[in-house]
Length: 236
Image 1: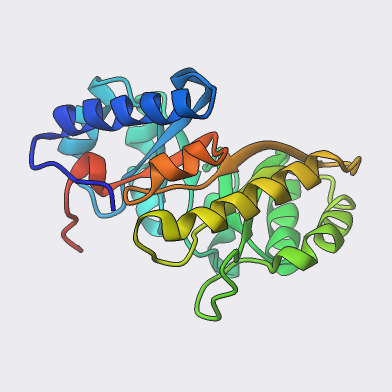
Image 2: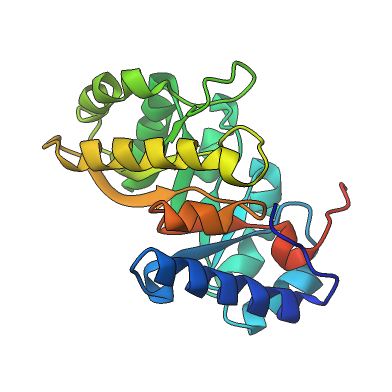
């Protein structure tokens, strides 16, 4: 488990960036190859503003309503906004056109609804496919063995562009989570070998506050960091 320091947002962010750089170096890459998404779930504007002042350019929200509530602030400050929470079909209309990337699309019904709303708005929506890499029944995400069929079906949706994969692996201490990240890296590589319209493998989003260095070592090029930047959350 990664340590979460008791310092302020700026100091914690410096620590996260240092660890990202070290992990990237261990994987033969540069820190600039890794996109950092600051997860702002339940975080008020002042600490978010402190992170933005330290150069954060991408933020992630887990709840559609919270994304809508903060969207004006994010837009004003030039943030690229991600939606990373469980995707409810009746909330898609609040996300398309606001979220630059919907990371948690996990089933054909979700992609169909995203496509429908995107068509109505006249936009093309970037998404990731969320994979249930640990086969956990309580979690969202498509089973790895169903990915290729999903890709083929998504290719018929003209208002969607799949940019890669995302996962939330089973909770585990230390190295126990590494095998899940390795499997995601394999799925990502397999997807790159396909030639399917509207489906590309540019982004491998995996790794959160407790395991982001391991995720980077195994090939993540996007990490989603909340408590390691903002400290423990207080639910509103």
